[in-house]
Image (cartoon, rainbow, N blue to C red; front, side, top):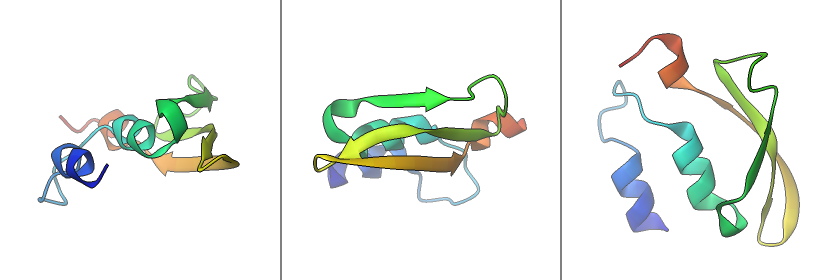
Length: 68
């Protein structure tokens, strides 16, 4: 997982990346149930399991803010 994350998250903290790729890399089986996709496009909100435990996830989505 760490190697895959290194390819997703750039070294430059000003460079945008797809937070959904990060979430899918971390959660069990890459399964993430996103809610409010159309309501708040700058935020990613949803549910998944991590190590078999249900979790809620809230993250900023930099790509939706007009970044390249």
